[in-house]
Image (cartoon, rainbow, N blue to C red; front, side):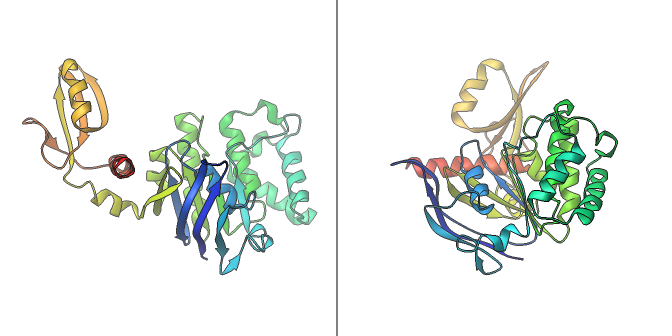
Amino acid sequence: MQLRIDKVSKQYGRSVWGLRDFTLEVGSGVLGLLGPNGAGKSTLMRILATVTGPTSGNVSWNGTDILREPDSVRAVLGYLPQDFGVYPHLNAMEFLDYLAAVKGLDTKPARRRIEELLVMVNLSEVRKRPLGGYSGGMKQRLGIAQALLNDPQLLIVDEPTAGLDPEERVRFRNLLSELSGDRMVILSTHIVSDIEAVATDIAIIAGGILVAHAPPENLLHTVEGKTWEWTLSSSELPEAKQRFLVSSTARRADGVQVRVIAEVQPAANAISVAPTLEDAYLKCLSAHRAGAAA
């Protein structure tokens, strides 16, 4: 399986670009598409799902141009958009039956598939409950079920854990990890912990531009030996934020524990700590913004 995105741009207005010359090759496994809100993630997801087309550039699935032949990828595609909605008066069985018919699936195999998926996403016991009574996490799990109706080779999920509580978020991440197997999963999010838990490959996007593309361990290597922690007073914190790239702060009885990314030891009492993917992500974005400003 290979998905190739070649110099894709999307222009919305005279000077408004959702994507600029975005190029990326994706293979099997879980690609985490990571970026701040408004970075262009959803624009890219909609193009890959053939919901919208780019202003320029090409996208191919296993060598076939999906812009010219969209059915080549639609037949093997599962898509959970960011704004996934349900019919509140239908129950899960009725909703998935309806979507299976829309996808053109045969009735008997589709019904067996629906039963399997409801068990997989832990909704079997509430399959007859109207969807209007579902929690946010339950609706997201139903969204994954509908995306898997046709057992897709390419699964695209856009901001799937936004608005979920921590327990539902962990459950959803575990489900995505189990689903990856021999398929291609593209997970778009601005939540670093979601990517950290499941991604085998990471692409960082900002301002519609691909900023970095590497396995998680390679990104972590970029901040190895450059992540520091120490405790300072509340009055010293503003100056630290001006001088250093601060990745986190935590209030303690003896002051504020601050975590920064710096090339050299930022303070006499600062200790070197193991980097996280969030440290690498923030450093990558900071370097991109500095370059753009220059």
